Length: 168
Image 1 (tube, helix red, strand yellow):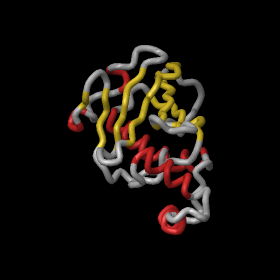
Image 2 (tube, helix red, strand yellow):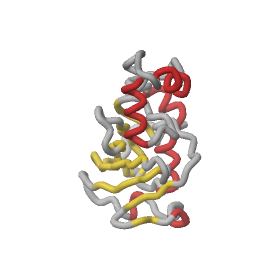
Image 3 (cartoon, one colour):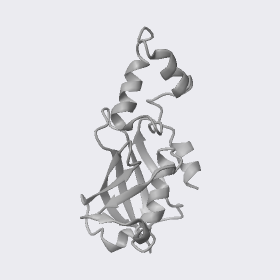
Image 4 (cartoon, one colour):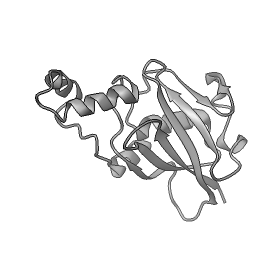
């Protein structure tokens, strides 16, 4: 039997909260978790990142450290920072640890809320400012923000099927 870790990955300071709940084998390395996080938020891995597990973890350690090396209990937290300029801070919380049952394929997204923010939008504050601008067609920046975001972007859309396709 393989142990599975269920993680809630939240974007810090998002309001309403932007998060994903994913299940991954406890043997998942931080390097793999980085790629999972990129996929669940639909980002392109175009920027630097780092993990903070009781202190910074260097990028060259990521393929050597697995979740099994430090996850011991439900409620445990650690952090992931993506794009040092925009500072997309993520809080990763262990929801539960359980034995795999059945033939599920992992990683697996089992829940979440809101669309992944657009990369290069100025971090959570810049992104939320842009979403506010789009609510007011008379705002002086409305046209360029709409063009930059695209008419089809829906900040409230959460498509679990699409996320799981990307995870495969």
